[in-house]
Length: 492
Ligand code: ADP
Image (tube, rainbow, N blue to C red; front, side, top):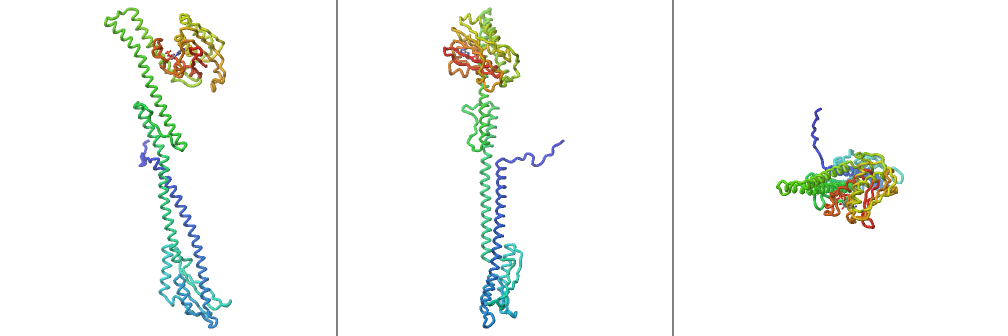
């Protein structure tokens, strides 16, 4: 089915922009709602206050006009009524006063029609255009009472349902402008805060991405930086961001270590190949040039070098096979397990070395006990051969002892219950310097290169042994014997 392409395909937005946009929209919406609520609340309260003021004003007008009633003349003081009446017109109230017979004493419209029309037009336009209040002029009639007796009526015409005086409308406009200015200011502030917040989150994520890209480039190009490669500063207070930075840094460190290790291995292998090859080449060239006669001795020397090369290749093959399939605690698929007695295996291995040991005049002591185990017989045999051959190689006088003991369970916490034997191979040979002990199980590590060269080792035997023991879920370690010499512990 053909996929339809939309204009959104390939459209991406950066994390920082997305966060900024989200924060800004969210904060602006919250601010708008808040402003609306404030506006609504102040509007309702203010209008109630204005309506209250209008009723109070009406009552005041009636009181003032009633006070202008002269009981002697049984009429209102028309001069004073006019003065007050015109004053009320300026405030937006069109007043007229009638006597008890209903005759008009004074009427604002008749007195100054133009003034009244201007005031009404002014209020109507202010309320309708500026404040969107849909109203109109409304008349209210009040009885004027003197000493509890009706003496006339006061008619007040004003804009209904309510109207703002000039001062009130100015106050309201000021409030609205202030709210608008505060809103704009808060929007700008919220945008700035959003940008800062988004940057705070997006920056480390971007840095992590860039670092991961640089790490990938460096490793695909095979470049190793001498003084540490790409690193992200781990200064972030947010737990997830700090975790992300430290994971990337950890990854970078492990990749660098693996690469260094690989380069070291290649260099070591090249070095180990060079020695026998140089020897072979020298011998063969000399024989071709007629410098050496190709007698049995020369050919044997060449043959020994090919054997050394072959052994090296086999050792490397075994090691890589073990390290590739290595799964902790004896789960390795590369193991061919069977149940056998470790003691019997050690006896067999010791037998292989009896001739070499007696030739060197070294004593070999065995302290064995029945020790059944489920393990790979051939692989374990290889471990014992490697460790024992070293003991024989590096011991010229004294003794070598081999023993099996039951392991105290606490010594291998977390190991499956089957692991319970400790094989100890101790010698009184030249021993291993303390500083070398942590490294002797590394590939190609030799405590003294020249010395080992004379004993023919490439420094792989213990690395293979460690890989086999680890594949069985066990442990192997060495220590210096108090009497000199070395002690190897193999826990299976
Ligand atoms: P090699 O094949 O060189 O012996 P190994 O991996 O078996 O390599 O051992 C690594 C190094 O540990 C040896 O080169 C040697 O320096 C040191 N070593 C191992 N076993 C003994 C021992 N019993 N006494 C002294 N040194 C030892």
